[in-house]
Image (cartoon, rainbow over all chains, first blue to last red; front, side, top):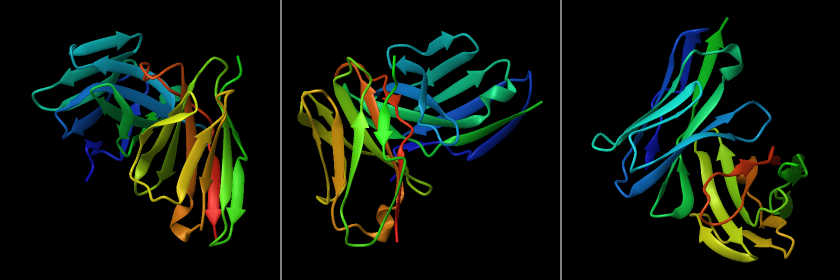
Length: 112
Length: 113
């Protein structure tokens, strides 16, 4: 049973527009969430994280929003660039247990 | 600063054999985690080592084992390989147990035939 779900396997966006990647979770004990980006033939790269005490964290073009009541988080990329084309993974952990639970990923294609 | 190094990059083994994968973390990082990535299951946590001790374990059979050395380098061993063990095995390092930002290696692509 997937505790972290990324229901959109793929997303296509025009360069310059906003990319919104969604992630839902089922375990209410999760209190730390991370987004990773993965290019082909490379390991995932940490992008941005958010603790459950916040509802928003921003880093440059990347913003993560957390809605605890809906058990939902989203990653916004504005403006999207062709170099953002990659697979994006959402991951979560509970009570400082560092065992990260991962979603299956969303493949983002940013078209020039 | 060198990144996380995994060797070998690619490996082909036959069913029943055993395999050892190696991971050298970023200098100064003491925590090493191992993951299995398959198309259908995504990234699945195998185990985490810190200061030569296994601190966390995922839901994998006992055929999957690991260890960490005093220099923080880690090895993962899979015995009695099965076809379903074919996957990308990723290693991630981080400074300590309290820091969940992990840096990944490029992975070892294991194919079991």
